[in-house]
Image 1 (tube, rainbow, N blue to C red):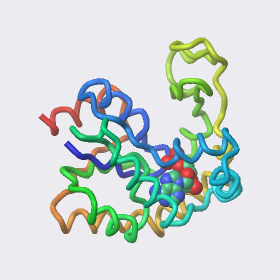
Image 2 (cartoon, rainbow, N blue to C red; image 1 turned 45 degrees about the horizontal axis):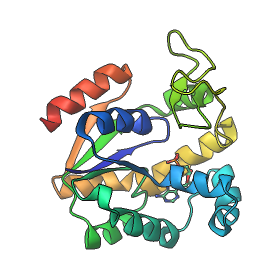
Image 3 (cartoon, rainbow, N blue to C red; image 1 turned 30 degrees about the vertical axis):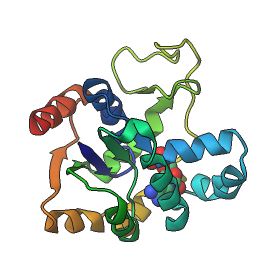
Image 4 (cartoon, rainbow, N blue to C red; image 1 turned 90 degrees about the vertical axis):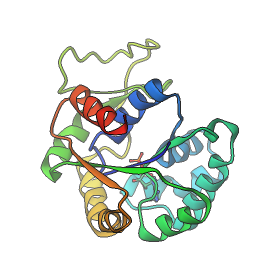
Length: 206
Ligand code: AMP
């Protein structure tokens, strides 16, 4: 099962991917997480992309295509994978077709204003990447998995969020039509609880 999770920033791709990963034992491959890890380790790639990411712009197609190509060659992808945040342009989707066979594209549908509210409340664990939201019930700023203090992502400022939404509408939203034409797209309304969204997706996958 080779899945693509498509949807605006803040639509819940990462949260859904982590739940699907537990259920189906296939890895979540997030280009954003791979890039942020490079920034944290101050690699040449990390230094090159840090400012682009902070501004909310897209890293070049060439860089992310190469990252995905190498990552899909690793042994844990043999039985399937979930792509979270890739492809983000039609060029990336075309490149992906050359080395991957996609089973289904899960499109998470959400209103832009909801996204701003959600992302301003998003908090992550700097150690294990656990993700939660200050708007959720029983929110605590301590990671329930490893005890670290949760942090805000550096690009979750209102300015960067609005820029990412602009970029999404211009460059990534055309992928909805692209995958619809190929009969690969299934849409889910994401103005719902993570639990309900997960259950709806599982029903479809089964
Ligand atoms: P994400 O964690 O998916 O929200 O990605 C964070 C940031 O990483 C994005 O705002 C982009 O700057 C960059 N990025 C992640 N995936 C891609 C991609 N497929 N193409 C271009 N830039 C990306």
